[in-house]
Length: 114
Length: 110
Image (cartoon, rainbow over all chains, first blue to last red):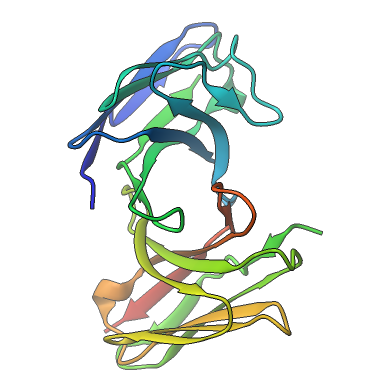
């Protein structure tokens, strides 16, 4: 299994500002994923980040709003830009295990936008 | 209709009870079925995964898949207060991206 850490664990931000969330994995992985988890809702995939290429965004998510970096095989960042209260959510990064049906998740970043 | 339906609960049971958690789905392409456990203020943790129909047992946990009914279950025997968490089902087929249910909140009270 992979051990994943995220920073910050939580934050309270003002609307119109941006927050960058960091995700660190203890082993090299090809694919990293960023999810959003809103209260009472299922996990929603924002984008898939592969090292050395542009992130692939899911329908409803755009690079200008959620820019992602993937500088190496153990690290990624997700920025939530020009935040509004609707962006208040838990943001989770995950990595694929040795099989597609196994994913390992970080502890999440709890974001509240006022 | 959502691809995966899961009752959010909460489901409250006494310690020692047998718990049944369920999901239904509509996409017949799903082949892999997973259960994740998520404690409060933590990320989801993979509990079990199964392929196609049938049962899989791991300690007090049993995962069951009925593809003909598009219905999956997770049974927890001899439930403990430490089992109190949100349980998310997830499914995979034709893609490396799983589809998650909303999660069921389980409370096991002493």
